[in-house]
Length: 68
View 1 (spheres, one colour):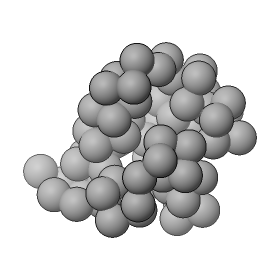
View 2 (cartoon, one colour):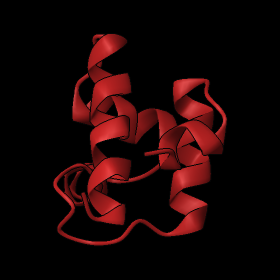
View 3 (cartoon, helix red, strand yellow):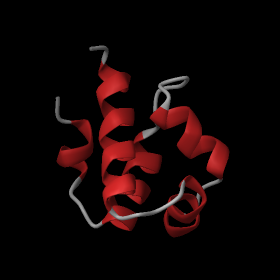
C-alpha cells in the first residue's frame, strides 16, 4: 500500500467510526470537504498541517493517522 493510501484509509475509518460525514470532519478540522475527499481517496498527499487539524478534530494523535 502506498504511503498516502493508508493515511486516507485511516482518516476514512476513523471518520466513519464516529458516524461523521466528510462535511462534518471538514468543519471540525476547519478545512474544506474537497480536501478531505482528496486525502481519503489518495488523490493528493496530505499536508502535515492538514493532518494535524484532522487528528485534532478526530481526537487522535497524528501517529495514528500515518501508521500502516
